[in-house]
Length: 344
Image (cartoon, rainbow, N blue to C red; front, side, top):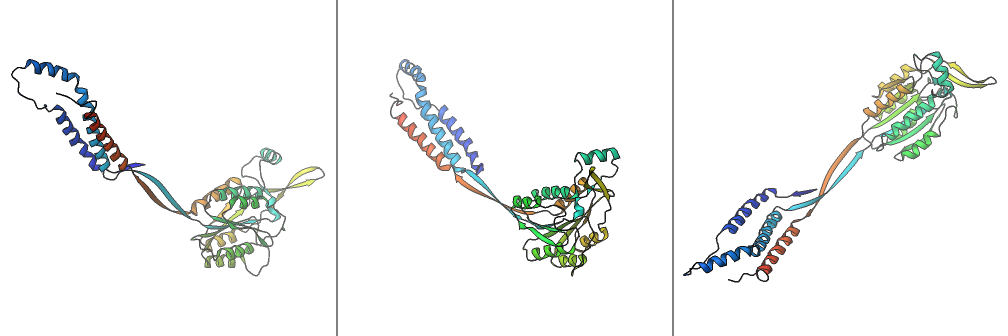
């Protein structure tokens, strides 16, 4: 961008133009002669040669205007914006128990549409839906360190908190339901996440826990104790209970692929207690739409803060205008004393 350091000095251009107009219109000094005939003849010839006076005059005027612009200090600025993000440390805990293979049926869907949607694959399993929405959540937060814990009977760190989100999503895609057991230990992933986050220097630390089951593993630490531990280290826990009123699990039989209804058993009161005790919030994800809505709200609640500093490096343009003014004056002087010199 280009700007003037002292723009008010540009007003001096008006007096310069007025002085130039006065100088041009001012009568030239004359001499007294006994007869005016010769003077009139010389005057008629001098009008044809006025351009010889005009060119140096315009050059001098341009030089003065260039000096006025130089006094106003024109500058060209290169704007540099330094933006520093204060990211949030997040750990996503994803249930990989066998029940995550279930497919939730949206409320109000007609029976014939259910069969069609199941057969053509439009309805996805819980694990597929969860991974899709988690990936979108990760992509929307490029400045946050995000980690991934998978759990069933025991938790394991699928990816430590990282800014390499491409690698994180690649690890997320490799996860599948039922590969590490069918039981659900809710306390384990929270305790593991707290261990990872407690020494973090981030201003905000959160855990997002996805599960479709109740805690059925007898561990030394209970889910509520793990939630209190998270609160001790200022870690907020969001819980997402996955499951609808009607769910099916695909099974292969001799007659072909069939879908067997299953009973949802996630402990909603427990998930609400975990979230409220750490300052978080509980979400119910009955289908892909409600899962997407839950992740969108979590994303809006946990905003990354930014600090922005603008630095402008100025390059002075006045020397160029001064050089132009000197060039105009020198050229006018040379023209006046050479090819445009007037001889009485």
